[in-house]
Image (cartoon, rainbow, N blue to C red; front, side, top):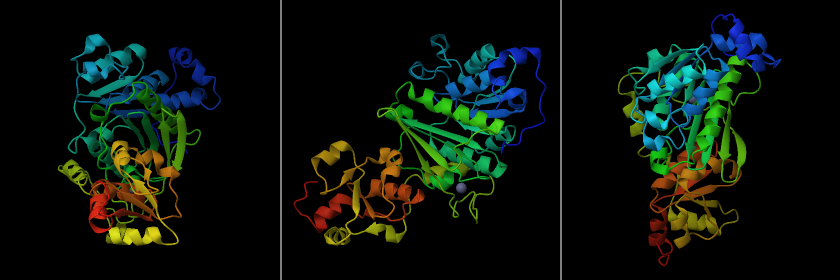
Length: 385
Ligand SMILES: [Zn+2]
């Protein structure tokens, strides 16, 4: 089912020449190209992801593109943000982007918003577009995009990148889960590119996949990533797909939604939640209880969410090391039918890990309360931590 777009625009002779390779495809044809011309897409964040996404959307002939970004081009952006030239360092990104995209395709309409998307402006900006493409690098912005898109009944093409890993999905509450269904709380230690670093070509892959999904949604062809999360591991050069489920308790698209409007102060609330996930009491396991389970007939799988360096110094026998920031890309390797116990040094990272595991359907996930320090104090005095 294609998403609704306004009445179709007619194609001009120039359009027929420019989009000939689209029109040759029976799945697109002149009908599809008219749909693209009639459609509008908002790209929020014109950085590593927004650069390739907006270039391909403009080239494809999406008739109305909106670009939101409050930053100026920085020299350190040029390693991956392929919209910009060295001479544009210091220029507002949306101004440089507009010039580049217009040079590529003068037939499309471009609107630019030289500002950050906030709870104050999101509703009115997003209301003008059919599809939202995520080029942001932080959780607060994604919750704002997601919640506005859900409340306006629009699809939100999600992409994220860190170091060598990327993710893509399409969150469309009308047909599947939303971002908040999957990430009920922000994964706590997740860093943005500025903090964690990113391989330059990685956003090219993920941003291009986002553009592909947006085009498919407009054309109503293929299987969009609704209810599926695509994971890309550039080092292993491997793509995986995991299924995502709608969360009936979701705060924005669930059966009893708490978020019913986007109001000032909203972003602060989303960030405050990042600090400490509230786990249900039954998600906590004392060191004594864990020791007993490890001796029992069905020992749980232990995942140690600390860094490889911490893990190398000391760990529980049989523990598997999955650093918290890499957990999302390992979710599909974890068993549904075995108890999982997340451990870390003091119990904070493991709490975030369990929140993430449970949000992804792994309900038999627990954390070692107080972490390995508590384990040492209560069970194993010689444990070298
Ligand atoms: Zn939801």
